[in-house]
Structures are given as C-alpha cells and as structure tokens.
Length: 141
Image (cartoon, rainbow, N blue to C red):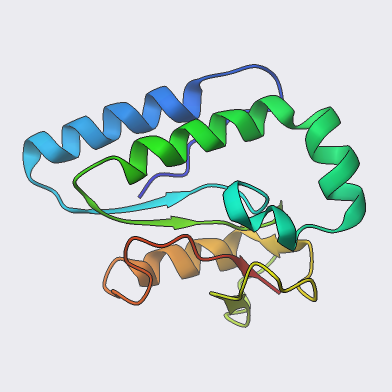
C-alpha cells in the first residue's frame, strides 16, 4: 500500500517514491499495489465541484496534482496488479464503514470529503478484492 504525499508545493515525492516502491515490488515478485492518489486527477476531474475544479486545484494545488498525475503514470506503466484509489479532501474523523466507491466520473452528487479512516478501510479491502484491478475508483461520502 502506498499513501505517500507532501504539501501543495513543488515536489516529485509521489512520483519518485512510487517509482522506488514499484521497482522494489517488481524485483521481489510482489504483485498487488494499492496506491492512494486524489479525486480530480485524470478523468475524475469531472467529479469535482466548481470551486475546487476551477480555483482550488489550478491555483493552490497544481503542483501536487501534477505530481499525482506522474505518480499514477508510474503505477499504470508497471507490471503490477494495481488499484489507484482516488479520495476527495481528506478529513480527520472516525471510521464509519459507510461510503461510496466506484461511482462514475460524471457523478457530481458525491461529497467533497472523506475521513482518512474510511479511505484506509477501503484501501485495506482492496488487498484481497479484484473488483477494481487496474482501475482508479473514487471513494467518498
């Protein structure tokens, strides 16, 4: 499981760190990688609300999202059995076990937040589930 990240500034931590993880996994013969990215990356941009899509991401998070894009490319180009999980804004909060996942990129009814505990719950479940293999499911309330 990979959930590395950094703040909103310029960084290649996600890309480079994930590249190192992928190389090590391929060398060791470990096949399953569950990688946390972000809603708004790739085709999930359409899931974002107006303010997030047109102000927050392009103005404040553009470098972080560029690093997420590169990170996802590293995962998708690998030989691994991967799932890239795309949550919206992460919040501190309790595990509820009640969240949505795998919704279409045209779904604009999702909430723009989810607890870290619920994202961790979803990611852990993906270790033994093949439903989203080689896919990029969103997870949100």
